[in-house]
Image (cartoon, rainbow, N blue to C red):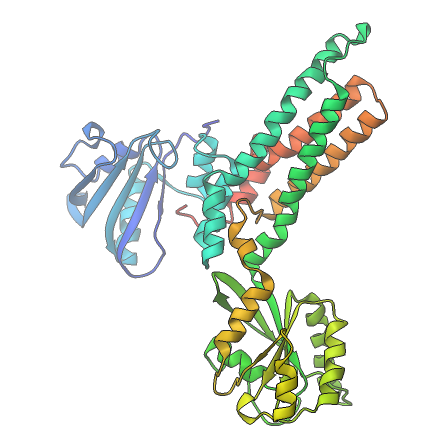
Length: 455
């Protein structure tokens, strides 16, 4: 699989001015190329995983004072010889060192080429390689844990177990093809049916976990809604701790949705401030209200604000009926607690779905956050050992499930060995595509082109 014979180089740290920059070189000529610029030591004779101090020279001119780290293959990230040069973080200096390495025989790496080589050289499978990009992009605790689990083989391990159980029966069915004239049956159809049902259940669990995985990556859509002037924009600003939305006493100020994200309990929540819900003849405001209804239907949870100062009980009951008809988990947020009328306040307070706050003074916001975490049962995100976060993996699981259904139908219809074998092969093929055992160059180029160049 190691068709990449040349030596590649790229900056592994973020571009821009910094204290240090790390330049990574990988390939069979890594030691020779760096040694041509680092003449004071024979790097080939040094032990792997050692660090060496000295000067990089080009045409006997000092480029920089550096530290060189050695990783001899196969004990390296790519399983090739790798050297990492830690230099001063001047963009000009980094560019001059990379140019010197290219002049000495390296070439600039393509996006994700280091990780692509790691995959091609058997360092890990394709699902684990994709988790590297997820780990780099993770912005919260749960996304980090999901990426770490996948990179360490959690998801791949699940797929491998499913494949191993199916391969035995696949080989028995294939064996039957060799004895087709004798009409011999090596694979017990009842046992195969039981196994396929078991695999189907495991695949379905993984498919269902994608909804969690999608939320971990994109954030939980949390809509802030209510009547005009109930304090929606004030609440958004209070949650974000910044003046993100315009606040005004004039009803109908918010005409379009405003979105921003914060982390609660290690999970990203994507808060959406919406136009106040009311009947209006203003065309622009009416468009905003229509968008509010759309956002509510798309929400994972709804924070519905009730104005404790100006609302009355009959109006509140109408709003509650509207809420209960939406089929979206909701929290009743009684706002303007410091100005609340006692009757309405007491009535709402008795509802265990309600939290009373003052968005303007940020009073009781922590109770609201706790209620939000409680209603969504965030433990499900943290306690899931294997969560599918990748669309490609999700689609592969769907294809596997469809192929498995064909196997079940084939058993039920008592189809011939060759057709049953073809359906089982299709199931194994779909699982193999997830981990990269079955792949093509177009797929690999598409996946690794989304990585940063130094990874």
